[in-house]
Each structure stands twice: as C-alpha cells, then as structure tokens.
Amino acid sequence: MQRRQFIQLSLLGVAVACSWSSYGNDPEQPQLRFLSSVNDAFGEHFIVAGNAAGEELFRIAVAERCHSGCLHPGAGQAVIMSRRPGINLYVINMLEGTLDTLVEAGEDFHFYGHGVFSQDGTRFYATANHYPSGAGYIRVYAADENYRHLQDLPVAGMDPHELRLHPDGERLVVALGGIKTHPDYGRIKLNLESMQPALVVMDRHSGAILQRCEPSHHQLSCHHLDISRDGIVIAGYQFEGPQWETPPLIARLDTSTGEFSEIALPGPDQASLGNYTASVAISRHSPVAAITAPRGDCVLLLDYRSAEPLHIVPLADPGGVLAERDGSFIVSSGAGGVYRVEATGSEPQLLVQHALHWDNHLTRA
Image: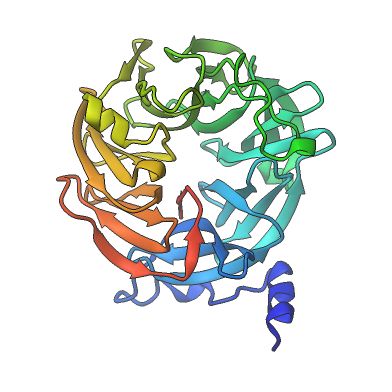
C-alpha cells in the first residue's frame, strides 16, 4: 500500500497500528496511558496513543496539527482538539483506536486546543475565540447527543486556553492568555502591549465569573494549568515581554480560600525556565507538581501545597507531562523521547525514542 493511501485510510478512522481492545487483556502488556498529537519527519500530523513504557499502540492521521484533549469519563471516547487557530475537535473511539466524529468550531470561531468533560460526561466544554470580536468563549456541547452545540459562555477576556473542571464538578478554572489573534494572521499576536491575561473561576452552568486573578505583569500570558483533588490550581505563564526580564512563571490559587499568589525562583533558577512553560501536571498521590519548560530544557518540580520549589530537572525540549500513580511523571520531548521523571529530581529515565515530534501535551487515557 502506498504511503499516501495509508494516510487517507487513516483519515477515515482506520487505526494505523493496532486496536486498543487488544491491550489490557494480556496482564504482561503495559496498558494505554496517554494520547498525544505528533508530527512525523514528513510533516504529517497524527494522534498517537502510548502506554506506560512510551510505546506506540495506535496512531490516527489528521489533516492539521492538534494540541490537547481529555478522556470521556465513561463512554470509551477521548477528544483531541486542533491547535490554535484550528477549527476541529476529533472524537476518538478508544476501544477501536479509530476516529468516531469530527466536530467543527462553527462560523467565526476557532478552538484553542483544550477542552474538558462534565463529571457525568454529558457536556463538553471547549475554549474558543470569536475572532471577529476577539472575545473568548467556552463553547458548550452535548456530548451525549453527538456533540451538538448548546451555548457559548463568555469568559470576559481574550485567549482562553487550558481549562479544568473543579473537583466539585460545578466550576471551571480557565487560563486566559489575554492575546488577540485572528486566523487571517495565523499565530501572530496582535495586542502584546495591551493584553490582559487572567486566571478565572466560573460557574459551568450560568457562566458567571466567580473569581478573576490577574498576573503581576500584563504580559504574563496565563496558558496552562492543573488542579489538585483538594482544589489547588497550579498555572503556568508564558512571558511576552523583554527577554532580559525574568518574572515569575508559576501561579497558585487555592479555590477553597481564594488565595492567589505567584511562585518566584532564585534568580539563576528563574532564568533557566526560559520565560516559557508548556504543560502542568499535579500528582494525585503526592504533593508534587511538574511544570515543563521547553525553552529552558528543564522540568520544574514543586510542592503545590506549600508552593516550595523542589527540583529543576534538565531534559531536552520537554513538552507534555502526565502524573503517574507511583508519584513519578511521564514527560514527552519535542526531540522524540519519552521519559520518566521521578519526584526526587533524579536524572530522567529515557523510556523510548521515537522518530516523532511530540506536541506540548499528554492526554490521560
């Protein structure tokens, strides 16, 4: 079969490698752990599934570069979203390793690459840009009705990026980058001097903004976050100001008390992050959070409860990060490696090397 024909079949939902259903039946076979968006050496785009050893289980070819997503809580599905300014979300059948549904953003909207399900799986929330106005919205879909669009919740700002469902199931925590973009200009940032980033907490039903926290500098673009079981948010910034400045890149919000703060590192450590964070993961089994810094070639580990920085772990071009049950983290590299990073800060363990360029996120599967 010719390579181009192979990709075309994959676009119709044929798994490139093998079915997820063949995994998990053999107790000696490592089970599926994550989905990720990747590019190959030819510049083709795929959604790839991997196991705890970093081995590829299946891949699905897609027509555009994708970003992040989330696992449905009970329907055997996952959603991966196209990367800003993408217009599609891809519903993956996790039992077959195939593409179930393609959902478009709708006229005058594009996605930012992130979404989340309600606890019962009936609703899906996606961050989106209404590009004629530049206003950010959460687009709400009926996941139990083949992802029918229901409503749009304004976020009172621009560039809503990553969002998480609060453990109470009723609130959304949203990182607002504050950057104006338009598909006609690709990924060019149009308002760096006037951007207004924020971290917001909103009611997922009414859309009411319950809390808005603003970074200490108006060019600290709040992009990525995770939330612990006890409602503590760790968010990562990307600084759009002068390169010689090194402001804090990590924010902490305790949603039970409303306390918001930023975590500054000692001077050389702060500079080592390269003014850019890519992904955040909080362990469910320890007080450790991991933040990747691809431009600084390192992973920051910190105690999310006390806000104490613990370790800076050197690792080339780290992007996606996923917390494991044993307290460690799986980290993907843009250079193709998949690593295990221990909470102790020891040297990362290379699990496998692929001829792929991993995107900045790993989606738990």
